[in-house]
Image (cartoon, rainbow, N blue to C red; front, side, top):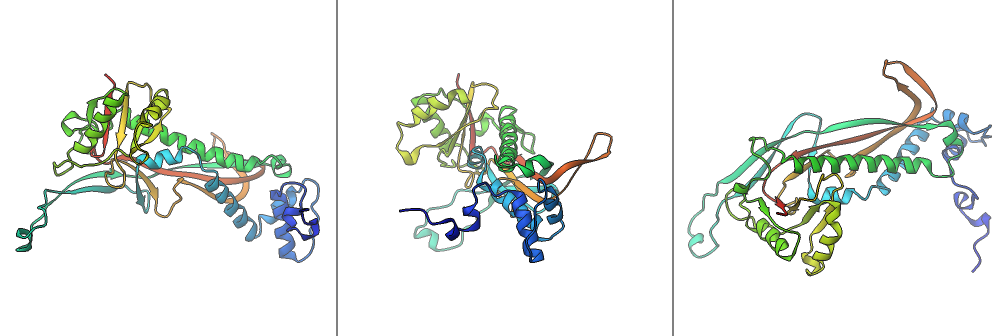
Length: 338
């Protein structure tokens, strides 16, 4: 059928151009004053005036936060697949404890007669969160002519760049064989998480068997299944083809990390929920992206000489708050190809 006449559409849907920040500022001022607001020139003055209300900064912050969440980078699922989420209340150093129980008897007639003493085996590691504070400067020209989606694109670019730095951090931890708090390396043959396995059917069998048999904190096999495989991008397609031979429920997630310096080794990770090996620390209640957007304000910045400069536009404060820690050698393994 025919589309409804413009008079029947929502005012935003009836517009023949994108709804810009200038439009939002004019609408907020119109609601606040109860009268039509004539937008003068490029509309920048309307934005400046609207910044003085309680509603406009809140509106922009909410919309910007929504854009940041909806346009989250495609790197985030990879980060979440191989790290255990840890929440922190502040920037202070905290501790994370991995606990495993020793050998437990099978429930039987004999176990009905008395209580059994079970002693947990535990290891503790230090965790801490850090923040990068940035200011997105939106020029007056962009505000007046943002029909190309600059602001959503800039927010998406910031989120992608943030997750890219996290992927670099993970590659650094893996290739540096990051130390545990005890001083022991993350990968060590004596802990059952360092072996040789070619990128082949036989090698894949070695990877799966290694994670299953790896001793837990109590010394017993974890029995963990392979949840994800981390490889150099050169090996991504070959590994995907190799995994096609497995039934779908048994296929691990493939994480190609572009910051691995070479493809001489690959890595296997058990479910971070059951075997937390690498920790990703976020502020309590934070979005999983680790990115937050503040309310807009005047565009000012400090130069290297600590001199304040005024920028013709507005600014959005963006924060990337995250920390990484090696939690345990249990649930992760490294495999050299030769």
